[in-house]
Image 1 (cartoon, one colour):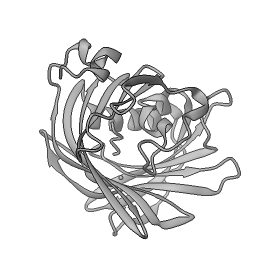
Image 2 (cartoon, one colour):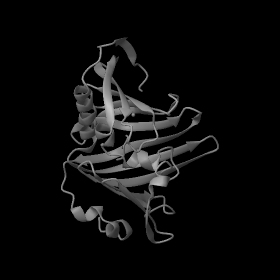
Image 3 (cartoon, one colour):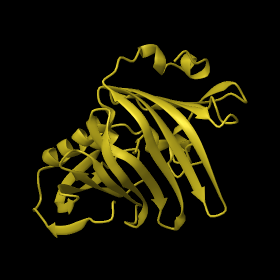
Image 4 (spheres, helix red, strand yellow):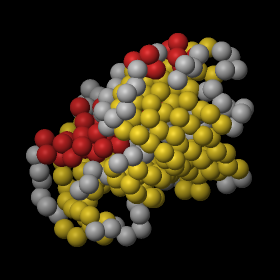
Length: 251
């Protein structure tokens, strides 16, 4: 989901370093955060806003997830975009556009390209829990955020991992909410940041309700996700996550 991301409210203050923790400890914090916003399964309704200096567009979406490996996202509004969808199963991604009435497999060479014209890449929305399995994690220290302890974790991809980033730095609260995620290129330069702008209770758990992705070179351009409603641990049929359902919706 969208990760769905998903993620810094304004008052984060670094207070101390905790010293290195084991990779297993840091990886477990990351995994719990992913489990928090996905659950065993989920159904959600959300709004995505793409902002540019001279224009802005908004799309409404519905999303289903099952475990960490299956996601379906479908646009419901505006009318001209309704029906556009993305299906992710394991490490595979397919897209569907009613205008061409074709399901297209997204090749690995296009995973770095924009997803639905947003500041999220195809890789950003398809990665699921690969950051747990394909990265080494180190706990750098702790911060405070709205009365919570925030764990600062540096995540460096394995040499063979199919990722474009040199490293990522995540800030995760003690209630498993992702506060922010920084993406650094291979030269160690910060390229973009995902921030939580609003955190609250929804669907029986505390999650990031509003998240924004901003590229550092173009701070006046951003993409924002708002969760309008979500249910966790609901029954979702395997048939939802098929190319047939992507093209001819039954859910």
